[in-house]
Image: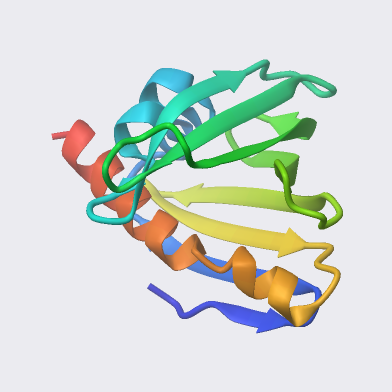
Length: 152
């Protein structure tokens, strides 16, 4: 996996996953699948996920803490662009925090069953805002592990 690169306003994360782009796209957009893989043992886990997968559609995820309690973070946003299986763009807002909405862009390019995954998260108001949203390397790791295991 390539390391994350960042500046004040942007995070970029890239990797190659040995899976079809459609498989990865499904993992990123299906509430049932997000509930299975959006988790890091001992840190957090998705507890509720809603996705209205269309431009202008809303998404929402309640992320519980490691103990599974529901007194955790809610993130939500709106889908801006969807081009299955190569592009997914949506806004990202943490409920209850006084930061502006940011934009998450997933680009998937498959060649011979291996998909280059490029994530760009933009629009941070400050370095501390960016740092608050710097968990993408963990998400990439669990996404890759989930896709690999679920395809076995």
